[in-house]
Picture 1: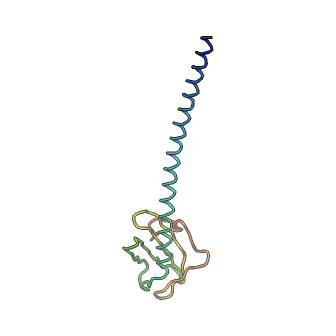
Picture 2: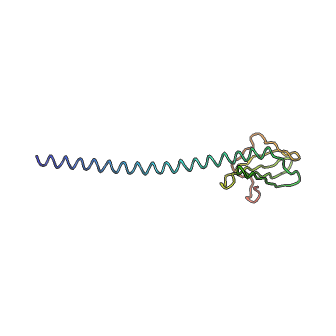
Picture 3: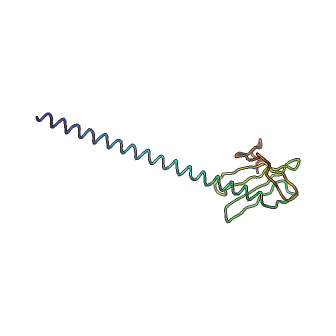
Length: 134
């Protein structure tokens, strides 16, 4: 009879140990998931701020004589730059200040106004050399 009690106590201790290890592992996995979710949330916020800067840049008046010009909206933290190219085309950059997130869009330029080209949205700088990116 004593052996049955000891083995039952051993099984209870084994189950408690296994449950404790399972809870610890679950807590660590949850912590990692929360970190990943926070990173994803920051990325999404920066992406939409850059998208807003890009749309804001499409509404601005741009100096027709400058090949590269930038404008900044301090209240919202947006920065938009226009690099004029050949044949009335240009590259507009929208950037979320302080995040490093930037989006580009090919545009047509006429005097001081620009218009987004269809299917011209890009999430990376399309220039072959980094120094050519606005």
